[in-house]
Image 1 (cartoon, rainbow over the protein chains, first blue to last red):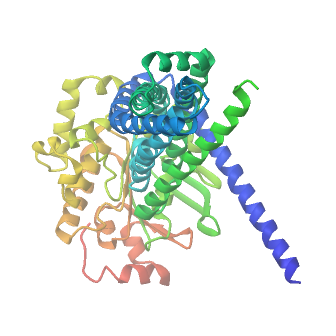
Image 2 (cartoon, one colour):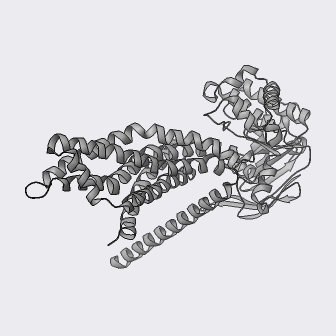
Image 3 (cartoon, each protein chain N blue to C red):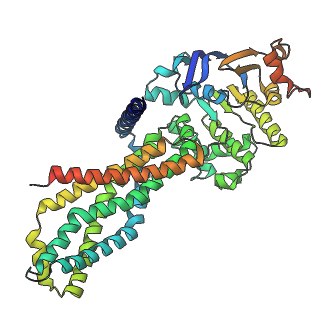
Length: 264
Length: 249
């Protein structure tokens, strides 16, 4: 009898989860469709896009640079620790550059922006939802998608690859300096090692990842913020949910893109 | 003309509107009364398509709101001013920008001279000093925020005005000022208004007709005198609380 009710509970849970997931997928698809329909309203979203792009891009430079610098330096130190003995020292340079371009640059930048921009988008839109500002905008015959969502999504999606390039440059620079300082690597060794393992596809791969992560860290928080209910507590819940969901999605996308795009 | 035909709306298991029939004639002011949480604001949001009914139809100017395309709905909304309960002002921009967003005609909105003049005119209409335009919503009192919300709603010269609890949370003096404003705007602008409120005295003061929403349906609807004379115990129970002091209309 007891096992029967446990089975029923599990079924109910699975059913509820499936319904909720399907509902989210449907609503996100509807949001994407609305965004596509708002593209011709460029007079509205372009000025707001530049405001958002400045906030996302310029506003994130410091934290992205700081994280990339430390990541590059630590990667360099760890590579030096691991590649000791008979392995040529330029191997470490290859590991540093490839780690930063393929993984650390895009993923760390995206995770930082999921916290910084994702939380901001979800909190802004969530507050606007619960204080009826979004309803007010729509009641004036204006599209909340072209005023609020499209500029944010485009700004985040287009600025993330730019920030990743910046992060790669800072990370590789810091790794190079650390390698010179602590591993005694010469500039010639570093350049040789970096070029030896580098393939142009790596940069494309990094940009495809950045673009995909950019979509994740903007669409998810905008959707979650737009769906906010129940006052200040709801805004808090949405902000947390946006950051967690965007971060988890980044990790899933990272694995999926590595499987799909890297030659085996 | 606004007409709701057998409109039903539920949230989960909670039935909020249960086959509501409700009509507002051109040029009149109808107050929608009812206890808090009965669905008055939900009903109001169906009129400009901010919410859609689970069943039933909403007609405005002989257009079925539920069947309107995106641009048609935007055009209709530009003719319907909506005054939100808490103002719903855009808090990241100034009062001027808030009111300018209310200018829904694209040609007028693109003309800076017109916008400046219209903002000043709207602030005059709601009895706010013109300097208020440069302030931010967070710098205003509750009553002032409500009035800026009204100024934004009338900036586009709407033919309909939907008022969601215009006097809730205000002291009697400010509530009186807002009621006077509702009367003044209805008279001066000749708009058709629906005023959602649980303030019985205010409703008797501003409305041509009054409707009582209860248990998801319109329980009674008529002129203030007809409602006062109603034999329905539910109507009398609701009116008795606030009408012990006579009001003039």
